[in-house]
Amino acid sequence: MKKALSIPPLPPVTAAVLLLATIWTAPLTAAPPAESASYSALLQLFEDWRVFERPPQLDGAPDYTAETTARRHRELDRYRQRLEAIDTSRWSVEQKVDLELVRAEMNGFDFNARVLKPWARDPAFYATVWTYQSDTPAHEGPTHHALLELWTYDFPLSTEAQAKMAGELQTIPPLLEQARRNLVGNAEELWLAGIGNLRAQADVLAQLKPYNTYAGKEFQSALDEALAATRSFVQWLEEQAPSKTEPSGIGKENYTWYLRNVHLVPLTWEEEVSLLKRELDRAHASLRLEEHRNRELPPMKAISSPEEYDRRANGAVDRYLEFLEKQEVLPIHDYMDPALRAQLGQYVPPESRNFFRTVSHHEPLALWTHFYHWWDLAQMRESPHPSPIRRGPLLYNIFDSRAEGMATGVEEMMMHAGLFDDQPRARELVWIMVAQRAARGLGSLYVHANRYTMKEARDFHVAWTPRGWMREDLDLLGFEQQLYLRQPGYGTSYITGKYLIERLLAERSRQVGDGFALKDFFEEVNDAGVIPVSLIRWQLTGNHDEIEALRSP
Image (tube, rainbow, N blue to C red; front, side):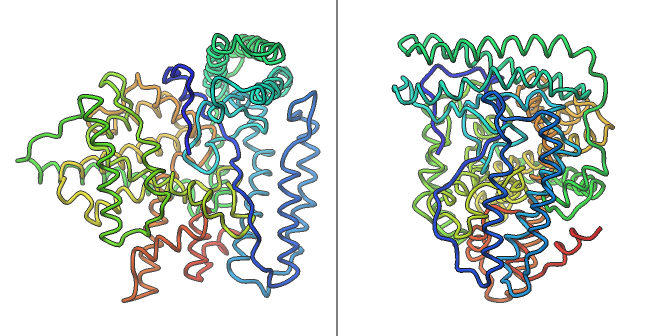
């Protein structure tokens, strides 16, 4: 559950540019009984692999030097050989799915070492401080292995918390000193955007100082040194920036390999372009039809006060849960109500609203459907998956087609199921959000193909978002396009994942026949874990043609 800091709120740009990635760990429970000794071998391999995936230490920081990275990339073959040697002939589908997850993580490690190389190309990789929890199993985008999760701390800091944070702060100076040697890439836009992440880190560290004057000398020293190192690193990045001249996209061929071998999305770069173009056209056309149908209705008025916001935001939770239960759309769990209410936010003046706050200030329920994310996290916490491989977040954002696809998909699914039948204007908001996701995803595809600059992607994003609700001056715009450049496949996962879940819904309903029920479908999808939709499809339907095709040369 997200925890708010009690230090003064950070500026929007600070919160946006500090979105890096970390790993959230759920409590362990017993693994399911193995059907053969080879499944036990997979579980042991997974445990060994996760230990190996974390780099060794160098001067108190994770070691991403070229020599260590090259050596570890060579050592990957040992883990792959162990994986290939496992006999799966007597396994259940669920166990075979677990093996594919481990294979995908190893492919992610390989891709990072060969192509993405965030430690060499992306200054944002070296930002350490996170100010809030992500709504996905792990933070979006590549990040290093020693983050400081500021949102997990209560202020004023206890003696124990000071000691813990001091240790995390002490990682920053040696890491940033190492980064000066590691960052040899020539990706211009990644470099320029990454400077903002480190500037924001300096701002956050500076904001901590006045509120910790009571702290011990060790903490104060660690904070001072971390702030000085961050400011010096920003200066170095700015000095090096004019020498960075190359495009930052990974190219269509690499993008397709990453989609298919790491995120297990059964599409190519070209197919994603076609799909997102179709969704963008469909969203705009559907919006015009909704507007025509509603032409005699009064326009939707935005929320205009904190009191109105609190009343409507909480009322929307009541209405949503009542709808889901009464219409038997989703199974209802005790964690669902508090998980939603913890994320409602507060009233934001019109001039300070980003795209999603603009939506929620017109009709909160339109955005609360996307908060399926927080139910995913609550289920991971409250009812951990029996398999250790699926119990926590997958590495390299491999969860994105399921996490973002479901959160985006249920927005439209709930509308079609009748959630907004008595709020016709709210249906317009759903189409506006689909258009925005398709536009930003298309922009990210063109950037990775090096057809667009980030500026051109932002312009496309703005131009194709209805009603002028995405503007050039919004911090959200720059953050989103930077994230999607840093993390291939993520910008499109909202729409492609939605499509894959819709296709699974159609296939599963045909397979089950007259006994099909939405409530059962969502429950079995949830119980499979936050894993790629292609693997959920295999587990639910028994059809593994997509996975076989993905593994083909």
